[in-house]
Image (cartoon, rainbow, N blue to C red; front, side, top):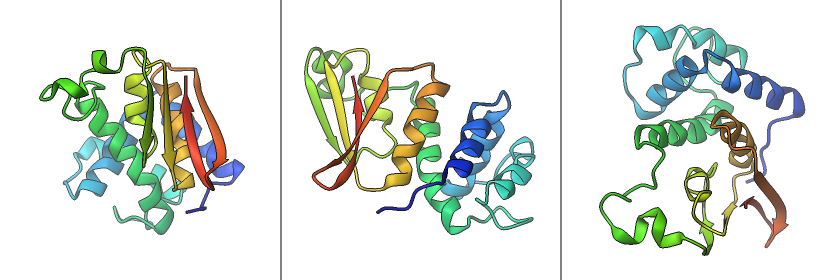
Length: 166
């Protein structure tokens, strides 16, 4: 799905997610996305979501672009809640990072790439194929938020956007 943020929108998102007070924004967007009541402190970010065009003015209700932006932010938040681990790695030996040591990994439907970020330390290379273009735009921003500078993207492989992490 080809919807992408334009350069101005992308700059605004980068600034918002890399700012020192981005935790409130991430909390608000995640809570709305999950159907949870946002804490009062997170509601302070409502004006920011409106400025980004993600919520209807004065309401914690997503616009179309807000729904797309919410997916990578929600997944990022859940990844943080898991202590940056692969989903289920504490319950299955095959999902533990050591299982990927020195391997090349392909993840179809990788979203913004939280699993790719988790695998950076152990896999030889992790590649994600993601058909939703806007998710790929969040990869570099969220990786930068984590201090991970070496996330690479390739595009138009098999007609899809591709996330590449080495």
